[in-house]
Image (tube, rainbow, N blue to C red):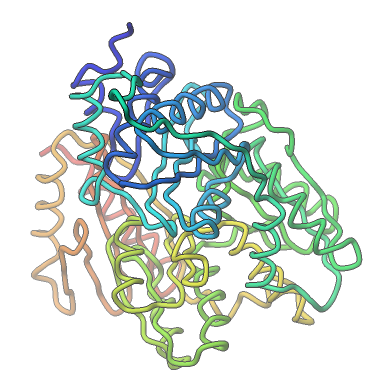
Length: 462
């Protein structure tokens, strides 16, 4: 038996929101089997739904997880190949807890498990994941049910068509015909995008597919569109084909990024503001969630449109919890995650993409012009710096800025420093010796100045 159930290894791969590790040294079939059994014990469900991405190890580990779950007495519905938001749809649609085998945007040697309760309610370290972890360590990989205990069944169900129909019911696209380039990055958008765009029809959309072949080795580029180099192929194809818009998805297709008709990358904060405006048009006065590294343009626009902006920490568990508390209609993160109340408060890259297409198809202007009103301040994007003592560096920054005139600070998540002309946030990584900087300013020069000044402070020797 491999040593993957060693307590130190299990502790290393059970992260704040999911399970993530390298295959097979950290994560293998035995650990997946033990996790399936522990998961059923914690969520107490009679039925669970399981999906997986295109990584070579995913189908086998999904089957092993199902073996553990059935040994614990649960019936398992296998939906096969799926994006993470397709798994969330299945959990909401069927009203059962779910598990998704994916490592999202991580390189090919990784895999992982994202788990939720019924109706796509998140499971994190504070809401069940720690209990699952402890049971995995204590219970080992056994799948032998207790004498007289019920063993669950495994059935298969295809939910792709229902998923596509549901998304299009939430964001119908009508108006002028669009040419759309989609870069799936050899990830799960290569599975979901054809189903969605087929329903839109060629009279509404001319689809230009890129890297739709499902390949967990990612032969073309990493499926991580938050990194600018992974968008270059899409940018070139949009310009080359004269497309109206480009869409890029990460490996499990729960995040979406836009490229406009000029080949320019669109900030996720801008897409957050656009979707917020659309949701507020449907439900005036609604609450919109934004995390603290989202551009200040988002809460400004929400307030101007009569909505209520609510600021949260970074991370899906915080976003979803605040959405539930406030009955928010929508939430956006600067990392490219977009959450919808009508999608069980879960995030869906494809639903965000459909909102962008619907807004563009209904307008008589190019995407760059449509988005101009939502782009008020230049942003730096997230810049990571390796820092041995993260807390000392944050304290150094706070001392440098707190006493300045017109400056306010807060510690909601890391350190946020705000001024009328600029703002920035520095947050320690939970898993690496990194500090993450996000800065913006009233103009490009102001943003660049504050960005460079803070980076110098971060990187100086303590």
